[in-house]
Length: 498
Image (cartoon, rainbow, N blue to C red; front, side, top):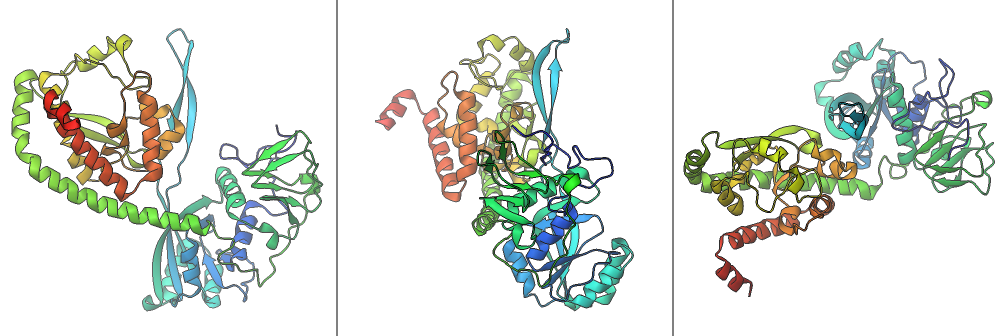
């Protein structure tokens, strides 16, 4: 429960909720842009924009040069630490922003306008590239501030700084549009999570609990509960029955809004604390990037090898499919891969050409518990298709999907947009990696009635959380064993188990 008159910032709510038209919300007297700049100042960095009249602080360790409407954070604390000791006069930083846009929901009704279900529609992730620069040189920062606009300022910097005194780094991070209320809301929400100690730079902010920072005038009720990160502005009261769960921001009461304090230089400079992510998280991200690169190289080499040793089978498979049910021999189904991008997942066709019509007539005997379809004896599958599925030869064309980067050898089962709407947490996890030709679900599923879709979700998330080269090798080996066991006669297979 939230007390009346309190206005939180969330991903789904603009920061202007409940404020008078034209008013700018503040916390401790600082608006979102000032909070952004103060957070950078805590790290010894002064944000400089064209046309602004703020003096260039001599005590700043670095100057961050950005366009007028750009607010930014970068993920890597280690890279920022390196910049403090960099020798070039100007370091361009290209921040690759792949922030997920979230989702929206709509009501689906039938022909009689009766409620059927809610449908979750995910926006496509739109990568964005932001240009900024760091410099330790006060004169360069001054020249950038004096330029009329960023569009003309960048060419002027190139003329001012020789090529041999410039360099470029590329890093991951988040960029925010100063002109967007939604982006300002995201910025403040993100700051509550990543800025460990705002009180060091904002005298009015004091910590009243773990991750809970409130204005010095705020008197907490002992019965009220807070789960940080939470920021509470000036002039606010919280009902004793209220529980505030972060990330959460209570703006200053407009009637009690304090005057903003100036940044006092030299600012408290802490490279390690706070940083935009904790060191352990940063190291984890670096490890994941290395694993992703190694995995991609392995996928390319493995798929080339697999295509080379199986290509001679293609003419025989073509002929068998054509003799039983004609063309086409390939089947391409739209599936989703990394970040929700759709691609045609290739297979040798194992079903009759009218399989979709047959599917609609067989929904009552579907044994699967989720959106997919499974039958103990599927009449849609051709005789050739049964052999292809049993030996998994129908999936050979997917190595071409792997080769061009749409799939991986090992990963979650590729699934279409419609099926991915049933479990948001599972969707976000599985679409953070490429889907695989094989995976945990394929080698561990039980096919028990009522558990198939649940196992699909469980093993998909399990793989993402524990992804590693040793796990991939285990899955590949178990897949090979299961394929060999599947084609052996039952007597030999039983003898092999014994």
